[in-house]
Length: 237
Image 1 (cartoon, rainbow, N blue to C red):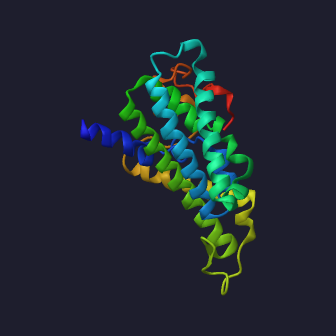
Image 2: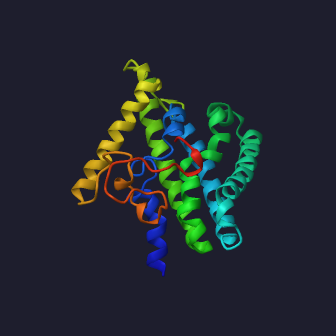
């Protein structure tokens, strides 16, 4: 049982990292990672919502009618997002200003909706909490790494401390959208290389055939064709 729980916890950090392996939540990933502290702020906020929503959805999984499960999930998630947003505004206004609209948009983040649909609604409380925590840690780690790389190359600083700006001219492009896409692509390529070395499937497209969770997805294409899964809750992230 302990090994199974540990596997659930670490699954979202490495094997099914939501950003690098499942390619979910790319909109906030690219938008807020202009600084490492932004990545931590978004990641921690999303992790709190993930854990709390997974907990409640798991507790209510036998009481929520199947036909209204998505609206119910969104309502639960929205409640926790509102609480997190108010806390961030009260205690870390600088991060709230940096994250902007992407903080309330956690409500429709594909990672949170997907874990609610694929895991929390089908599993007991403890595994659901561990799943949310693992996915949150993986999301936070990826955003922080991307933010650190872009901040260091684009501004010559790291967490606001001057590192290379005094002797290397910052490359501003890394703070702009093209820099975000470039760093994201490099990280996915590194993730693919490590996965290939370990004999695991690489990320080649966004279709169902590449998704590790396709077996549990009602909308997955099972004929191997590289078609798109129907997005949970209609989100385009």
